[in-house]
Each structure stands twice: as C-alpha cells, then as structure tokens.
Amino acid sequence: MSVRDLADYPWDAVVPFRERAAQHPQGLIDLSIGSPVDPTPEIIRRALAEATDAHAYPQTVGTPALREAIVDWYARRRGVADLTVANVLPTIGSKELVALLPTLLGLGAGDVVVHPRIAYPTYDVGARVAGATPVALDDPAEWPEGAKLIWINSPGNPDGRTWTVDELRTAVERARELGAVLASDECYAELGWDGRWAAEPIPSILDPRVTGGSRSNLLSVYSLSKQSNLAGYRAAFVAGCARIVGDLLTARKHLGLMPPAPVQHAMAVALGDDEHVQAQKQLYRARRDLLRPAVEAAGFRIDGSEAGLYLWATEGHDAWDSMERLAGLGILAGPGPFYGAHSGQHVRLSLTAASERIDEAARRLRAAAL
Image (tube, rainbow, N blue to C red; front, side):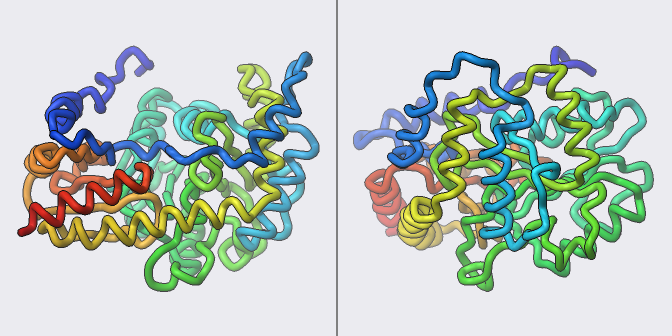
C-alpha cells in the first residue's frame, strides 16, 4: 500500500453537519476538532521571537538545551528520573511520528501493528502506509504473535481511557514476550479529571514502576499542542529506548525531519514553565464542568472520559443520528465511527472551544432537555 491508496479524508463527511449547524440563529459551536483556541502563552511567544535569527539548518537531534529540557520535564512531571539526552528526540508534532513510526522501524508486509479498539485513526493509517497489517485490540492477553509494534494511548483519544501502573506493567510484560516495540501515546497526560486522576499524576510507560529497570523497546510520545497551546508550532518529542531513538535519529536525518530552530528554542522554554500548564488545565476543567452536566441532561451518557480533552458521549443509537440532532442545535461533534468499528454509537465533544461558546453549547443542550 502507498499514500495514494488511502481513503478520502474522513472529516470531509462532516461537512453537511457543519453546514446545518452553521444555520443556527446563534451560530455554529464547533466541538468536533481538538484544536486549541486559547492564546499561546507570552513566555513561549517571546522565546520564539528571540530565536528568529535562524540562518543555519536546525539539528534533527535537537539542540542541547531542548534535549536537556525534555529530560528534565520527564523527571519533574512524569516521574521518570533516569533518562539521558540519548533517550529523547524532538519531532515535528506527534502526528507525523505516529504516522511514520512503522515505516521508520522498517515494518512491512506480514508485520502486525496493534492499536486500541477505539483509537485515533493515524495508528491504522501508519500501519497501512508501511504495508503492515493493523489490528485493533485492547487486552494485552489478546495481542497476537507476529506483532512488531503495539500502540497504546493513555489518556485515550477519544475515550479518555487511562492506564494504571499495574496495567502498563502487564502491557510491557506482554510486549516483551512478543518481542514487540511498545509505543505509548501520552499527549493528554497533564489532563486528568476524575477518580484517582483528579489528584494523582497519570503514569508514563517509562515510569520505573512500569519498566522494571529496562526501557528496551519502549517509547513514550508527547506533544505540547494541548498543554501549551502549541498546535501551530508542531512541537513534540519521543523518548525511551536509546537504541530505537538512535535508529529513528539516523532515519530522520536522511529524511530531513527536523523541527525549526525557533520552535526548538520555544519548546525548551515551554517545557521549563509549569505555571502556564496549570492555568490552561484550569480553563479546560471549567469548560468541562459546564459542558458535561448539560450533555447528560440532554440524554447522553458519558463513557470513560476520566482524562483527556474530550467527552465521549452516546445516546445509545447510531452516531450519525446524534450528529444530526446536535447539528440542529448548532453544535458540531466528532462522529464516533471515525475512531474505529467499535464506536458506532458515540460522538466526541471537544473542550477546546472558547469558554463563551462552551457556555452557549451548555445552554442549548439544557434547553433541548426541557
């Protein structure tokens, strides 16, 4: 398979619902895409401006300051204190890394790539582009012989599923039995809401309680798009097994995959400042506290959603019918079928709209319940 063989971009199917929602007298409220709308923090914007004299080619490996900042961030925010700069590598956002990882690992025909049953579609796309076979399975006990790459997503997009230390340890043990690379997409790890995650840090696949002292074949992927409103910067990184990180570095040098130098400087500054991350989380918490009860009052059940940037909601019937009902209220959601064959009755509602639009969405939903 090649890129030419990919199906039409699925979000094109949402256009009719967007058009209907836009006809609402009080306007469209777009909760379909998790694209940040809040300003990029001034400390990061200033850092970007300071680095605009970028006359030389940037380093694929990352500047020493950025690599050290990633190492320090894992120690401070994720409880992973034993990384070195050989364990980390910046990427041009996380999506390109997710899409290219099977190819960069040399996978192809006959190789299996496992991903969650309810999942961000790029895991599947990346496997297919490499010529490998994607398989949707959640339970490590069901992961098949022949799996070469296994993706987990904690907290999950779209459903917010969050793996505990014990669950991660079980996943690592099974991946080692299979000889597979285990890659954990952890881009929403700063956004815990319910249960233990309201107060307890969300664990990384690289947590020493998980790894048993060995990072071999383990990768953690993280993005600054959500925690720092840097989606437009394409600022992310991968960390873990030094051997794999070294192989990825060599391949990425050949392909010219390098974040721009000003972005690398801004990333280092962003990773060193926790204050703006906490402020952004409080904004999302306030929006979630407004939206969730209104969605439930309108007849939806919220499944999972214990962490992350979304509400995973169902009325118990076809997702496209729910999309139509919400569009009639001027609200655009993300259709569950985009996230796999097991999501036919759910819609995804993002917390990234401006606070006044979230408030208006809540008002419309509550009115619809009367």
